[in-house]
Image 1 (spheres, rainbow, N blue to C red):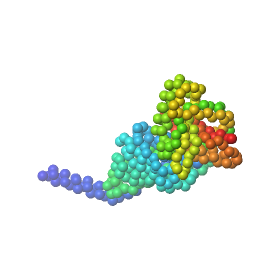
Image 2: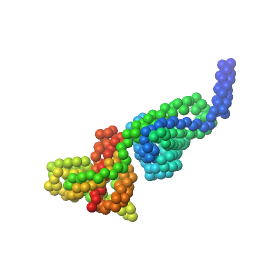
Image 3: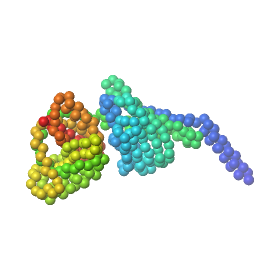
Image 4: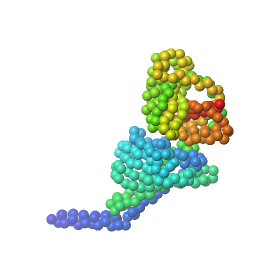
Length: 336
């Protein structure tokens, strides 16, 4: 009985101690890490504000290469988000942009579902400093009574701060080695014959599935006709109708000759010898700003161009381990 009595007393002491800790322990946690990056604010802002690029620099992406991601909203706009579901090291949740001040500040809301439910927030601040940019990454969380007891025994600043430092190091490397984003060059173009498949499809169907299946069909046709592919695969765009939300495009392969039977396919000849070109680096589904830069250049020069545009997919993503900061797409417009 004495043993039970002492056990009871010890339990009461432990419980009382935990209650006291719960009463005095902080109910909020904030931390931040900073890094000077030798790149323009707009370059860094472009990377941070596009959640499609998080896997390029996030310290947690490396913990689960097979993590599944889903994206929504427009990069750089409030409401843009990504949802992840991965292994036990990364769990699952959603990060959403909640405030955007172009080239100065980004705020985010972070909701975890696994391994436990929680909600927190944070910011990225970008400040000019001596020809470079000071990037500050912050985090803020609130604890309930039980959580405050648990966190009392953990050094969250060290644990999370280490990950933040790794992320900022990766961000620095990517930003400082980013290629010029939207430099328009006047270049020579070699007249080329393409075998393609011209289709009219809704915007939402212009995706990797469409291109993969079409390129497989084209590859089979080239093999059947013993035709030689002489360059990178392309997409030839003839129009994007904003009213009907329909795209008129032709995934295509450049060929040495169009001799053969091309049932259901199109022989496309581009005879232009001069072109305007942007070498765009990034995901294939994020070329809108490059096209906008090209159109602005064309307008500023008072030029008129052909009704077709070519995107040439010069880099195989697998060859650079799917680091899309190194994946180049050449975008060609053709002056009349």
